[in-house]
Image (cartoon, rainbow, N blue to C red; front, side, top):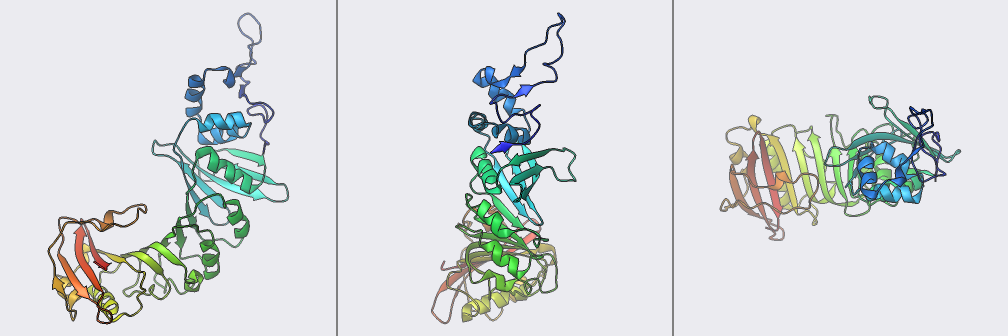
Length: 365
């Protein structure tokens, strides 16, 4: 893998970083100062210097040689990746200590060249060009920072991107967490789902009211997920059951409608539109819009047995933020219901945190 940046700062032929501006100025005795070589320092001093470099500088230096890469790896920075897929590939590199970098990754197959550069809207500007394949470059980033499980988001404007090429280039990663915006078409949803390894956890970002799933619901192809989060769901009725197959489903509803809860419970009791693999469902509403008799409205026409208000959270897989599955001190109700068709049991929990109200249906408990 060749670093094609100017050799005044980084050289692909040497494993040292040469700082030339200061080193080429004559000293007071008129003699030229020798070049400063990073590899001549003790290991602790090397690491101290490298930790102060920006992430793009570390990446560029790591491509000089295997020794340079090992030195960056030895910093143990605990880096995470977010990939954004639209008209080009974009990466966000960060860690908990505040190190952060966002960059475009553009690939020219004809030249076998990767351009790694800052987005136009960023104040900090950089541009690096490497003579290598896209797959080799992404594999280098993966092994350099030991980040094997990045988050992946698919956005609009995918038409100009070769998704098969990107999928092959990212084959070394374990893609479990994915976000899909509803501006993506059914075809590209189908292509995006091919990136998954396992487990499959998806955030479906919904942001408009014109039947948001109608454009791409066929793209899900019956794929089974472990967890699906639907953000900012804009409708007063639920359309996702026919094509979202998941063990855990979370929906952030913009409209507070107790009849939606009532319909969900009746559908489950009657066995309509519910898959056997579903283990838990939660709906989140704005508490300020709740009618006073929302409990009666939610449970109207349903036979149930009131259960003790146990402050015990339901255990779900770790996926970004699990606070919605915790139990608050403002629990309003806990009910047991039974399905007519097969006698299967479920627990209904009505709970609230701050300004949000939560309906939770836990099946088999």
